[in-house]
Length: 460
Image 1 (cartoon, rainbow, N blue to C red):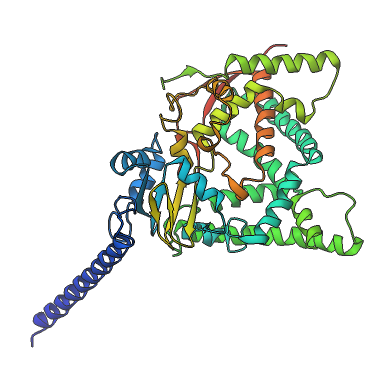
Image 2 (image 1 turned 30 degrees about the horizontal axis):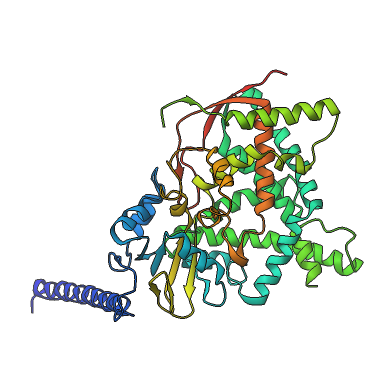
């Protein structure tokens, strides 16, 4: 046999082998697809939908919409085709997606008994099995209760108020010289500084800057393709996690050594100590907070000056219209835009069958942006919450920015307090103009262009 014919045979075999692998993969995919399609098909109650392309499913469309100016468009398109509950295939897993508030409520309230956390592989890889997101049963209730109790305590809120006032003051004092401010970066730095203080009592300095840098790399990989090859985002994020854990272990060990040495702590300063003790639309346009919010905040400031009183944490959360502004912000761009669960057994909700072992994505963002739940949902309208309050008891299932059930975010009160403090000092110290920007949901909720604003100090 000649050299040319030998090379041709080898090339031919490679093509045959590659084609065989492709056919095998396709065959396996369509077999699995038929399994998911036929499960429970006798009563025809499994939600309609599409599993998309082999292996990747509808992931690319899901991610693309997350980067767009209308992140819920992925859900909206399929809701119009299949109804409020539909099946899909996202991030490597067949899944049932719910945009129905009643179905979401059942999923949230049946944690542990019927549904358990079941997040994409990238999230479980990064957060680990010991994460509170992955905990179940009595351990989850205990840890959630400990952290929630500490974060809700008046003593911590008073401490956080002073820390926020200090951080905001230092940050806003520099704005007079800058004029142009990336407000997303400013608020992120302030919130992160306070958060790390609450969690581990880390003060501004080298350790805090290290946490900021590594956390930014870590969080990029939360929602990504689960590929751990060098250079991939998941690989980079896992390396950032290793560096973060090394510093966290050192901090925990120092606190544990002090606790073992002294036997007890006089005061509990952070979450780590809590757990240790227990274990034991148009171009450039003027953007400002609604007039009602500015007026009530300025009135609070004038009253405090006249009485020569310092602010206390209850002052900030006592302003009703400011809370309406926060509600509307959470509705349009809340951080928790969905939760992932897995069914432990067959369950039927509102006529939809969710078979055992199927993954469920309860989409909050879709409910918040549904025009059947909110009139003109794309319009920022904090006055709508005054009307909602008049219709008592009708809004809870349609507004879930912090999740629900026994996994309700333990830091919800603290986060509202932090935002209230920031808004108060913003509207009483500056007028501002913002450039056009919009929300994106991938990999986390943020403003596309970091929310650039031009600030002008308010003369006093």
